[in-house]
Image 1 (cartoon, rainbow, N blue to C red):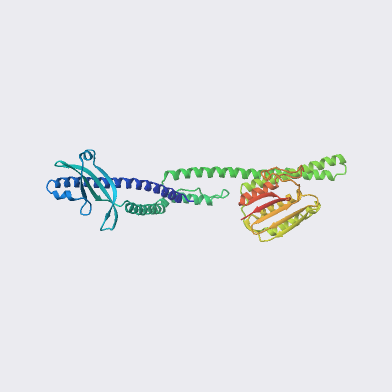
Image 2 (spheres, rainbow, N blue to C red):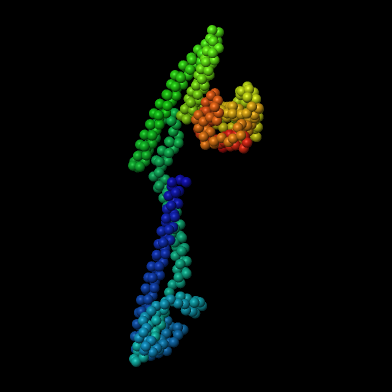
Length: 421
């Protein structure tokens, strides 16, 4: 979720809570203010009625509320002296509404001559359910207007404010460490974005220096190591061709040559891993994996025949992907080599292809491998010195480079699956 949308979400929730609490407080205060106003009116009305009793005796004939907003009843002295003015909320039948309506009622006592009377005065008040309903809809409209205003401000004002950030982000997405391109520049004078620009450019400069050093080391190592190893191998092969070399010496030279060849393969594998991790493979092409699998099976036919391993290919869908063709070939070849090399005598290898995955399964040891370590460098399940322990590590590095998912499972057969969707 975008930052602007997250801010809208949190602001909307916050405003809803604030408006809800404010509405409750406003409702209570407004109701209290209404009651205070009505109570003041009832007090004033009470005084007017008491004053009226001094001039008009007919006032004492009011026994009910049918002809006015007050009633007067004669009471004894004890009840009158013990009575204090009090207000109550109740319902009275209103003829004009033909329904019970809420009223605010004041009950008081007063003395007229030698007698005591109870005076009850009422006044219509607001209907709380109507008040709540009106307040509810008013608050809903207020909330909608506030949220709409925030969305408008976000889309117009804040989006313009964040524009330098998104431009910087776009430059970083297009950035390639292996290409010389100008450093990203933040337009504007926002302090935080300027600090971000400095931090990002500092990291880019450091990354470029590190990449250049690693690339230089890789190229130097490739030249400086491969050349002497090739010279040593050639000289050892020449020594083996000499008849004067004894059988014991020939065996020792053969072992040395085998070690040198393994060291050469190991050096090539490490250099390849370094190049993959430094993203030095930039050539992209639409790779047909079915063609690559068939080519690899043909190339490894002698190796599989020597191990007496049967290789079958099952294609249920065309698998294509845009990537470096040499890395795709290495990916397929390493999976097949691993399946053949770690197989049983007379075992089987099955390759399955569909629209989004490549699966290679093989017979082998009746024991599940450690899926957490199997793709680590120099992780070997055999003591055979001809294995470098880097084949699956290279497979994992290629998959990580292109965002593939590579998994290992065991269901009687060892299965490696590369998902490319």
